[in-house]
Picture 1 (cartoon, one colour):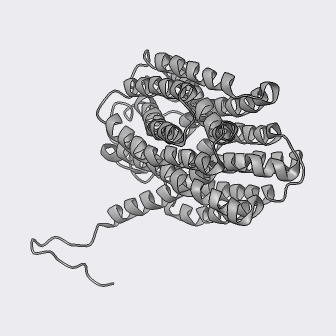
Picture 2 (cartoon, rainbow, N blue to C red; picture 1 turned 90 degrees about the vertical axis):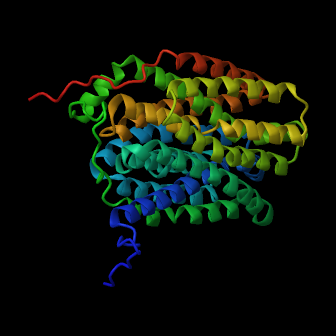
Picture 3 (cartoon, rainbow, N blue to C red; picture 1 turned 90 degrees about the horizontal axis):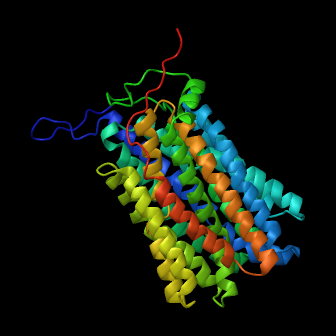
Length: 420
């Protein structure tokens, strides 16, 4: 092997192996987040073309995607336990294969049951393994503490970049090749994820630093769960993240058809979702940076309060392309900005040893909200021909979430050690 070149001061110009491995980890993790979240954000674009081609009502597709979110949430704690015990690489590989396979089968689904199996069950479980949540938990373990909040923001922002890039591409695929071929092309993109997962070999190699949370006694997974669910601040975090899931899933799936109903075309609908992704690149990254300097619970409260105002403005303002794109930009700045702050609070309270598991249960609450947001949107539309009731419910829940974060105690919990 060639020797590293020397700088004039005698230091090597070749990055140390640990630094190279860290940057490779961050790059591959961000690409996984980009693909996984970007493809997930395209499902709302399939609502009308798929339903029309198969002769189904919107509620059939909405139910399948609602189950997708629920299975994502159900699978996330299990994926977290496996990742904490055996590393993230295996979890991401299996998740990526299921995700890609579910998309491919969705393209050939000829019944609502087939759609539920493919787009609902398979993609949902695949998301649990190959989502940004698994990536962020691995970042939390493998990135040094002084760069952790930054890395969490970076990984979250990558997911937002995926939303900005993949949603317009998905719409272009649908227009050019039809919805079924578009689904196959997105499946091919997700097939890259298992290859990128190889960067996560050695997950857990970076030792926990001497912080208050890290100094807590080492506990088993079951003991950590018992302590977490007995901790009031953790339960409040679950309640707040439920609201986040309700809003994000409802907007992702039902905003495009809502805008079409208000006289705007599919192009405006796709670009509104893309604007969410574009502005959340900055919002998520800034959230991670600010979370390392200021109170995470106060930042979360401000985000949810701002979401309530944005939703109310969308409903009351005239339905013009400019107003819709402005809503996408404002909502985007707060879209995934809750993720680095929420996962960061888990690390503050309980350390990173069981981070994937404990954040997995927080995310399960998020996905219960996602299921209800998507399903209620479809049910309300089927019953009333309008989404307005669920939009106002999303705004009211935002006020609730802003308030529920205020009592959270932003310090390490006192976990009991394992019995001798």
